[in-house]
Image 1 (cartoon, rainbow, N blue to C red):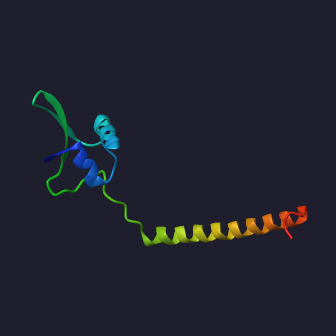
Image 2 (cartoon, helix red, strand yellow; image 1 turned 180 degrees about the vertical axis):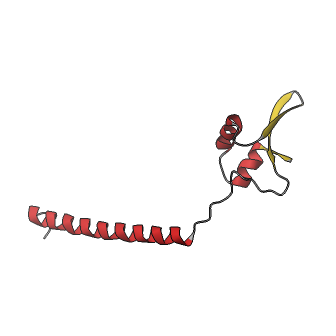
Image 3 (cartoon, rainbow, N blue to C red; image 1 turned 90 degrees about the vertical axis):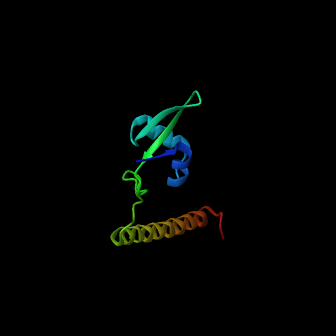
Length: 97
């Protein structure tokens, strides 16, 4: 296993340094504390091949994409309906000609 600093780990995985510190303290990711020049320095242990099992990117499937497209379509229809209702209400109140 390779040792990397918390900052490098955060940058490589595109997460905040604060989140990396929380993950180290909770034990979600393996870490090692070493004393260097009188200071305790914490390193994250990562596999040599660069693969991190916990933080692999989730690839959306085609099924997930079509589901999202359906939901977006329904929301667009609902927004259009609400706009028509709002216009009708404004007309009935005399706010819109």
